[in-house]
View 1 (tube, one colour):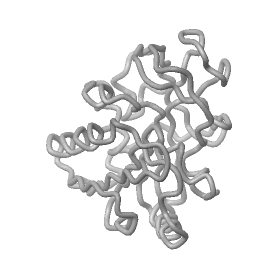
View 2 (cartoon, rainbow, N blue to C red; view 1 turned 90 degrees about the vertical axis):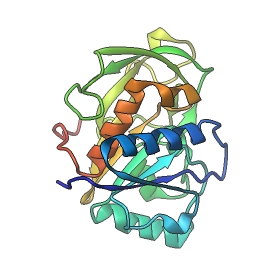
View 3 (cartoon, rainbow, N blue to C red; view 1 turned 180 degrees about the horizontal axis):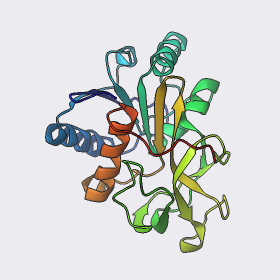
Length: 226
């Protein structure tokens, strides 16, 4: 495992919808870095997404954000041991890039109105979710995905569709997950649409655990394929 300090790149380029919460997300990750001893660089320069970092965070990216050369470089980075953390609209990214679809786990399909919902913690040993209660109630934009990633990833949280209106995935609705990718590690959460999310200590702790996991700074819970 790597030890601190680790180097984190926050990448927030958008070629589609742009979330107003991006500045709050960058600020939150910078503050986590200052508090926990890791270096944070924020950029929208696609050429900066290189192996110079231990973890690259795709913070609500959207659309096609890397050209063919950038895609090849990022694939090499992750497959060779780099870390990836995708937040919210990171699943609304790279639809023409099949490898990225495997990395993120599932692509965004649609969402209902922002509302309060219950998030069920499936894994209370993973560093990103160990602090959460069995059921966590919060307000966010609740993504449906084009496919259910279970079976390809290790699911950490699911959405209880009976707790809100407009869900479209049914009884099994993963929302946060992780998996190994080559020699690297990938983590994704559908949470993080709202600016308020990034001031929430519980959500910040989830992001901290995600970064530490992706950077191989902490051991993960067993990487079973479900």
